[in-house]
Amino acid sequence: MCAKENILEEKVKSLYEVMQQEKVEEIKINSDDMKLHIRRKNYSRPVQRIAQPTIQNVQQENTPAQQENIVGESTIKSPITGVFYRSPSPTSPMFVKEGDVVETGKTLCIVEAMKVMNEIKATERAKIVKVLVENGQPITSQQDLFVIEKM
Image 1 (cartoon, rainbow, N blue to C red):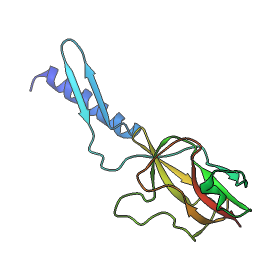
Image 2 (image 1 turned 90 degrees about the horizontal axis):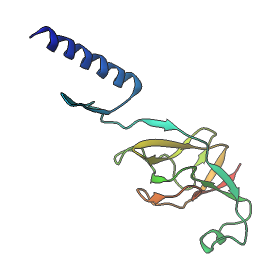
Image 3 (image 1 turned 120 degrees about the vertical axis):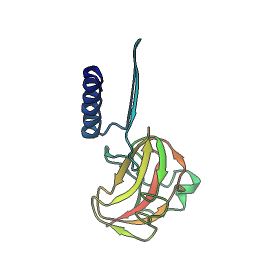
């Protein structure tokens, strides 16, 4: 191996180490004399903590789906647009189900946005009255995800 190849190999290794530290999965570099594509084998997607979901009191004049809720219940809304997941993987148990009492900080679901898994956590102690979204369904920012009863 010539000195030029050794230098290139060291630079690639160094770049790969930076990718690991910064949790970058893939990088492509194209120049006139070289093309480089590095992809890390990372079988789990990163989990990012995002802004807390909003909680809104349910009003009687809400949509028909929400009108079935009794007074005193609230909804948890998604802070972002993405895909709703009830468990960390297809074979894992759901984070919560209807009837569960959750404590502050408990993960309720994951919203995948731009290939980043964002945990949605409970902001207070509450009972999950109803799950309003199906697993794997696309959702929008401020969409109701759960009906809860504050405790």
